[in-house]
Amino acid sequence: MEKKEPLATQEEYEKQIIYHEDIPAVELVPGQIKAHLISGERATAMFATFQPNVVGPLHKHEHEQIMIIADGEGELVTGGKRYPVKKGDVTVFASNQEHGTYASDKGIKTIEIFIPVRQEYMDKLAALKKSLGK
Image 1 (cartoon, one colour):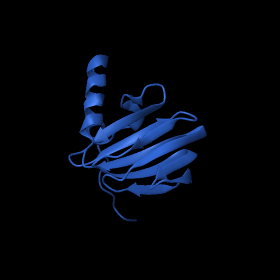
Image 2 (cartoon, rainbow, N blue to C red):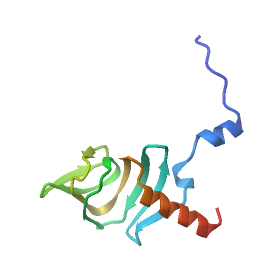
Image 3 (cartoon, rainbow, N blue to C red):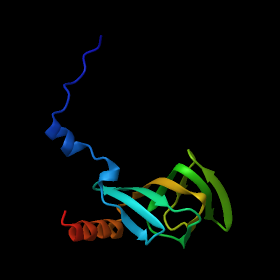
Image 4 (cartoon, helix red, strand yellow):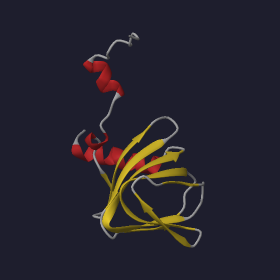
């Protein structure tokens, strides 16, 4: 049997591992889209929940974005076309590529990675944590 590395202590674990739902959810669009956010030095990860039938309006940003459909279904919009998506689908939006989302009546949960860091989102998280006294 191959020898494994020693198991991390509880203190080491708590410094390294974060359960995304333990991060306060930022309302990106009040009552419609909320997200748990975490950033490293160069990238931001977002665990977003789009309520049923929500429209994420067309927008663009400097950040490259990878979007993974974690649950639900809907349509992504880019280049003037709609693209049906479901759990397990993945797409990449280039920097400044206009895109939007139509959530189905089931809603959509996504995991999204942004490079570089989405500082405006991290500022919203910091403000939320401050208001919660965290």
